Length: 124
Image (cartoon, rainbow, N blue to C red; front, side):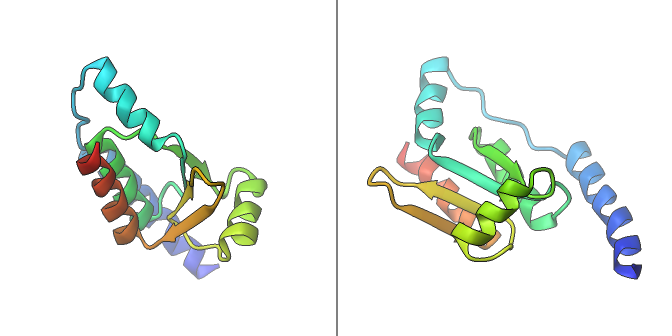
């Protein structure tokens, strides 16, 4: 109960600061942005809106102009169950990477997710 009382205002503060100091997205030509969108169409980010580590990943996505499906694990139970059953744990942020061969990779740890996204941008 006490942790909920602490988490709620801190979460709101995180969301407010993220809104106020939101990074800007790069301006790209439509064709160039479509190439980035194609590279990220196989990615999904399991996250919580006020989690500071999730905010870190979402800020990187915005800064790099990456369109990745966001899956809030508190809004739909099937996202939470999917994360636990397929990914193995209920930790966010978690990047789901659907590979061309049908294999699914679950990437936890915000720093690892950010590094993966930045590598995508370099390769594109």
